[in-house]
Length: 461
Ligand SMILES: C[C@@H]1O[C@H](OP(=O)(O)OP(=O)(O)OC[C@H]2O[C@@H](n3ccc(=O)[nH]c3=O)[C@H](O)[C@@H]2O)[C@H](O)[C@H](O)[C@H]1O
Image (cartoon, rainbow, N blue to C red; front, side, top):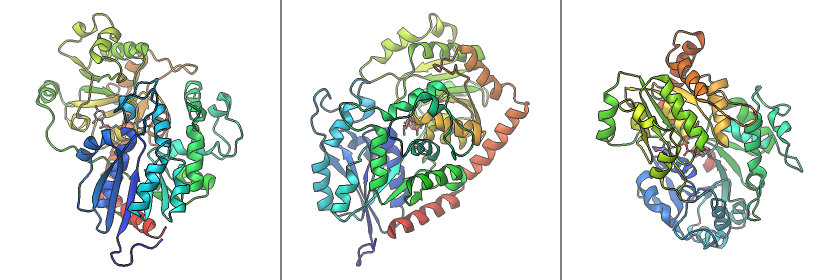
């Protein structure tokens, strides 16, 4: 592809799925690229999401946000335009709305005339539209290579795999990482069709087949064998962003939390949270809360609930009886958004119990807290395996194979292994590996090199 003869400018359209877990990596990518001269970004966003994106996207003269109108879909309340604002019952209707946007997107692309449209897994209808308009399309995976590799292992199947097939790594799959029964059962979600729309697997395959290149939020140092495996499976150019480390939030940590955290000795507090849209079941909340109490360490527990529920009612309903009184002065439970990057950077925080959302684990690694993972859905299982079994930078809470049940003792044992038994070989090597990856992730030169190469790759697509 050749850029505009006169300006040599590369105009990119960004088009993420309607979820902030997806919008955020598209914003990170835009911010990395727009810091280079000659890159123009048009960021497509459903109207209701624009204000929040404005606070995240570095605005330059060459960056614009273009509001989209989400078509009406029966059952999807007006103004609900991202997964965090839906209820579990209506979340899949967002894909119905997205699919109805094809004429709007075609019209926009016709007028914007970008060189490349960078799009998400759900917009499987986009590559043919882009090709028809003479625009290159790049499918950007916000998931790690290891998760995508496992999906591409199913290429060529006429019917979805069975749970038994998913639990065993397919021939040629790098390493020995396979799924447990409850993880395999969760993985089968990608083969399920809702409201008559294509399954995630079908969408992803159409995206991969139709696009000009696949862009991964990863790099060879982090996931070389998995990226090689994907390349073999999809037979498309694989572009890499490199190690993407979220930019630190500006400003200070809220005074209330600073005051609370500062009460405790350095590296003693457990921060426990599950990202932007992962919710625990009642039983999981009970066992987690009791497990944290059992450690005897101070803790800051963040529990969120689907948008259609009242979180204060849910907290009262789900926390064990007498729990808040027993942990008074030592533990806090909060519902709602917190300044996670500030919290992880606070010197009192020594352990992060989390869902293994990729941004969250990276944020833990660039700080000094120990990583205890409790993955609950989708790519989180694979992210956690990469961290615990490949990189060996943290531990996973032990679970029952058939249904993923964990008890308070399992939470306690996992925390104990990294926070109290610090002289064991395992704990020592976890700390060593953490240090190594922290150095790698903080190396600006490596990050810059990947972005420079990516810009070159995009220009020559
Ligand atoms: C692709 C999708 O991303 C999802 O990610 P989610 O947004 O939960 O988690 P992270 O990647 O850790 O990202 C979460 C991001 O939100 C920030 N944050 C979150 C909550 C809060 O209260 N305050 C914060 O600052 C946090 O610091 C991080 O930067 C899931 O894994 C899902 O499985 C995956 O498919």
